[in-house]
Each structure stands twice: as structure tokens, then as C-alpha cells.
Image 1 (tube, rainbow, N blue to C red):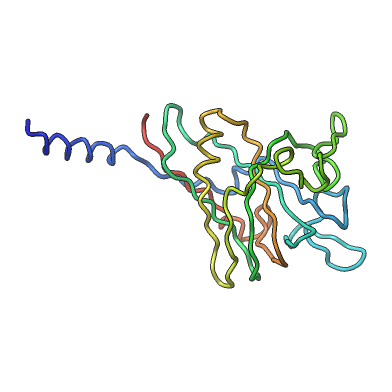
Image 2: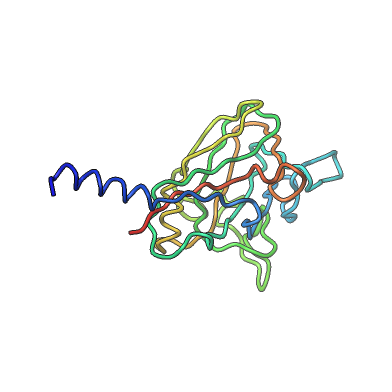
Length: 204
């Protein structure tokens, strides 16, 4: 068989078995808000007024950030991740958002002060998961600017590949903001389906 034909057949086979799946917000198995003005409440998503916080809307800013972790169980075993993109759904914004890979384990009771409160209280190395190389990666995985009327999609292939292969434990992402941002909630309301992790993979 001629080399060119072999190459074309190999190209066709490799692309025929590649698959892209969309992991929706239903696969979010952990979520927490880290609010500098409400340091012990992991659901302090939006400061409605001086005395009240709500969780049905998510407001971001220099003092409020979010932890989110997706289960990757929908990706079959024995695959190679070729691309992963994360869509962050926002409502009103004109600020820059940064996506950081979280390093330590966090869970029940996670908030600005603590990364977990049960079965015992464990604080972040720097409150608000601000410790670079301890609470979060030294550099952000991706950054982008929110534009009104458009969803923001960022490339997170590096992180998803590391988590899938076991090179690093899946502790999810921390998203931070340079200025004010109003997000669509990933856990409440009719817009949560817009939070999507799109993963393309193929057999190793």
C-alpha cells in the first residue's frame, strides 16, 4: 500500500474515533463562595444589602471568588485528552476573570477563612485561597475578559489532562475577578446549563 494512502487512512481513523462530550453543571460535585465580607459563610454569593447575602445570584469582585469542581467520571478510561474548554456564564460584567487550579483538599464548610470545617477546621494558607503555590497554582490556568452579552470560554486542557491521568488530584478551580462581575449561578436558576466543560478525547 502506498505511503500516502496509509497516512490518509491513519488520519481518517484517528479522527473517526475522537469524541467530544459536554459535561454540564450537574457534574459539579463541589461549590463554594469565598467572600471577604462574610468569611465563614461559603454561600455568601451576593451581598444584597448591608445585612443580607443570597446564593441565587453570584457576584464576583476582588473580595469574592468561587471554588468549583467537576466530576470527570463521564470520560471513559484509557483516553487521551486533546482539548478541554470551560464556559463561564455571566450576566453583567466588563472585568477580567482568572481561572486557577486549586492545590489542597477542600470540602464541607469551605469559605473565605477555612478550606474545610468538618471533620476538623483547616484554614487556607492565606485566607481566600490566595496563597500561590500553596492554595492555588502559581499562575492561572487561563484568563479572559467578560463581555456583556457573550459567554466566556477558556482553555483548560492542561488541568483536565492532569486530573484525568492522575498527575494531580482533581481539586477543581478557583475563579477570581479584577473587578465587579455578576454571574449566572452554576447551581440555581434557568441559566446554570450554560456552565459547560467541553472535553475532546481519543484512545491512547
